[in-house]
Structures are given as structure tokens and as C-alpha cells.
Length: 166
Image (cartoon, rainbow, N blue to C red; front, side, top):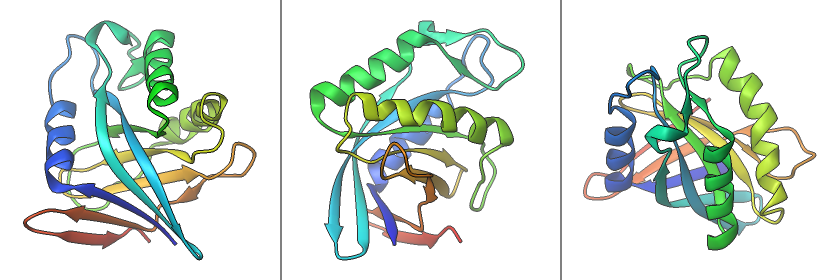
């Protein structure tokens, strides 16, 4: 069982940032830093920090919603190394309900998320997509292991929410 916990305030802040307009990218992306708690067969990811990708670190590529530059990846990975955190790529598709990854999302995250292990091999890493109401994600527990879905998301705050993704 994989759980992803995030404060409702951080979730709201991330969603707000990801909804900002960019001069040419159709969507925004960022990184979430997290810690990990293991209890038996359960893995809980505790999100604590959001790092948006800077405007100048997008590449103008109309074939995708957003394309990050190598500098964006370097900055995110360097931050994960310096802060000793798990790193999750995050973006939004809007809409409501539990979202899903596009074919491009799956193909590209399969390429770049395993690279996060180059800077923090002892941490799990992943990718998350938001809707306006929910989230869905994949986590890699090891560089060589296939990703697996995050089973539950928990919003923690004045009004706690929880949802299963499967």
C-alpha cells in the first residue's frame, strides 16, 4: 500500500501555481519534495515542499503541453540532492475526479524519473498529475523496478480528504 500525504495548504498552493499562464507552454510543471515513512508493507510519502519550474526553463515545443529544459531537470535534481529528499514531478490536467496520465506523460516519466535515482538512490521518486479536485501518481521504489501506482492520496488540514486511485 502506497499512501501520499500532503497538507491541504500545500496542495492548494501547488494547484494555484500550476494554473498560472505561461507565454507559450500550455501547462506548468514543478517538483515536490517529500520524506518517506515505512510501516510493514505500507509506504507513506509525506510531501512538504513545492518547487515550480521557472518560466525560462520551459522549451517551446507545441507537440506537448509543457517541455522542461535540461536546466529545469538539473535544478530539481540538484535541489533533491542538497535537501536529501524524494523528488516527484507534478503537473495538472484540470477537470474533476481522479485524473490519469496521458501517453506522453507515461512515456516521458518512464525516461526521466529513474534519473532522479542518480542523485538520491536511497529515496523513492515519482510523478503526479492533478485534476481540480484529485490527484493520481506513480512511484518508483527502486531505479530498476517498474513504477507502481500510488494507492491513496490524503489531504491533511482543517478539512481532511482521502481518496483511492484504483
